[in-house]
Amino acid sequence: MPAIIFKNVEKTYENKYGSFTALKDVSLAIQSGEFVCIIGKSGAGKTTFTRLIYAKELPTNGAVYFGKRNTANVKSKHLPFFRRNFGAVFQDFKLLSQKTVYENVAYAMELVGRSNEDIENEVPKILEIAGLKGKENTYPKNLSGGEKQKTSLARAIINNPDVIVADEPTGNLDPVSSWEIVELLLKINKLGTTVILATHDKAVVDKLDKRVVTIQDGRLISDVVHGKYNS
Image 1: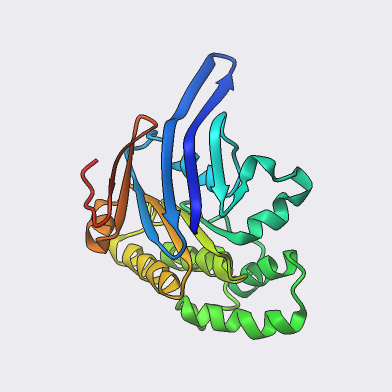
Image 2 (image 1 turned 180 degrees about the vertical axis):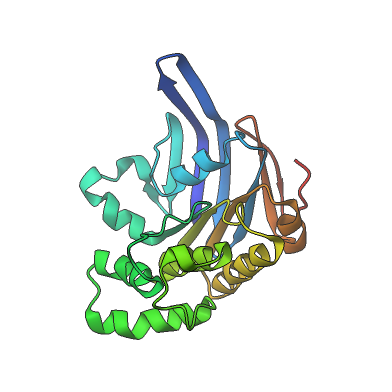
């Protein structure tokens, strides 16, 4: 069964100046366990696409499904539970500045009610996988950009989500750090997690040789099984 399905999805935003359609009649299916790159220029609709996946946004027309579940039918009181199926990673990291690396990751477990024993067992394992051993007590201000993103990714995967949605995770990183983040995403994907990577990083996309979905002016214009960055 596909993990994610978009059926004729349109997303229009209203503001005081009028309306803007960010996505137009987008249809596709992402299979469970796939690694998919979503590419396109700034403003093409990539971020809107990713936000629709975990119901941060809802479509204006059409439907988005996670498995058999229409995201529009998830009641607001159930959204926090629904979103536990997803881990999100962003360009600007979104770390809590007053918490250490360990505390940032542990906090994600605390939010879903995991026990102290679980936290003490799982956080060190995830930090080692993310290449953050020795950085447990470091605050974000003292981390490099790559280390901040590794912390963000560790936090995203700590509760074993079915899907990782990464929106421009390498946008603020140097090439070496960028590839370290991508290698972590590949490692997570090999363990069975679906990974959706929205990026305009040509070098990363071309090196990955994964499925590439191209969005241009809100429309899906290309979907290639082993693709390159041609947007």
